[in-house]
Image 1 (cartoon, helix red, strand yellow):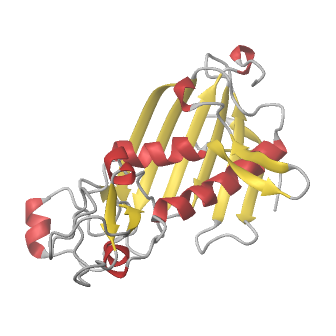
Image 2: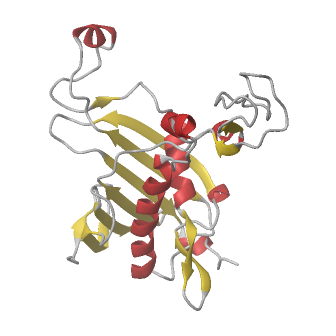
Length: 255
């Protein structure tokens, strides 16, 4: 851990620097947090960089619709209609089956078990990093003011890039990073981050649940956002870079 004066790469000086590994978190937990003050409307900029593989927030239709898996009480089959409790094998009705969200992975559907979506662990990592920023500057967060959001999501480089793909996508750089034009969508990548920065309720013995990691009181305060998606250069890790810019003079205490 270190503190000092140095540029943050966005035109200002950081009055606090934190670099290191978050205890107890995942394999890509190395991170950087910087706070820069400058003149202008966006008088404060928080910069967060973490070596995490970007994960997109699932669309609502993928997380609310339920599918039915389990064994039919009449024929013993496992093919259950996802729109009702009717077995597609014998057309039987009234059977009891287990329901799981469709955001669970295909293996979960076949095995009848619920597997958490990768975005859950991803958001927890971001919440831990956000909480460190809140601990260092408790009077600044959560932000209750118009916020400018910028993000660069850099995905891990694929092991191989075929010749056919290089010909179809001439912007692919074989020696450096390149702009990513494949799934996941840029807006879902940004949504996962902004949702994480609203914080997460965690149980605390004796205190019930406590909100941690809330950098922005509500994502409705983000009035402008930019998301870039990239693929990493050879030998470089995946990374998520985020900047939140706002005017502290406009911020009001969170209710």
